[in-house]
Length: 155
Image 1 (tube, rainbow, N blue to C red):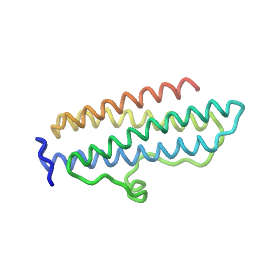
Image 2 (image 1 turned 90 degrees about the vertical axis):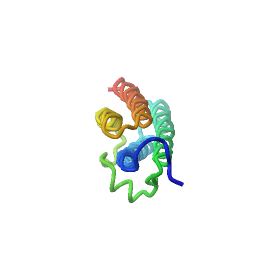
Image 3 (image 1 turned 180 degrees about the vertical axis):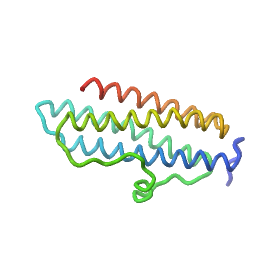
Image 4 (image 1 turned 135 degrees about the horizontal axis):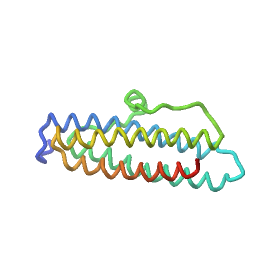
């Protein structure tokens, strides 16, 4: 059944494309955090293991919210890995067990997403007239700002 929530089909489709791209990026970051959680080596292993786990658990909730918003708009959420990798703008780096390299990679991803979210918030609200998604994106931006701050504190 078609969603009748006061957003045109054209705008809902455009917003869903943005959200599915964000969903793909969030999955890349999620898997990067899982990779670092599994493969970190160092004298503070327990601390970093828990730190990475806390971040990927937070992202898991965000990922679900993004996908559900796409469905609320009446479109399909990207759910196949090959589709996500085709949409994702974030890169998967080579394996590393070095804390500083891992943290630099994570900080770069969080800051990249913050800048992209900031741009999408305005476009979704002003161009596509979707205050609900704009609000979701604003919350996600704040979450990434906090996660980036936490990562930055280790560097």
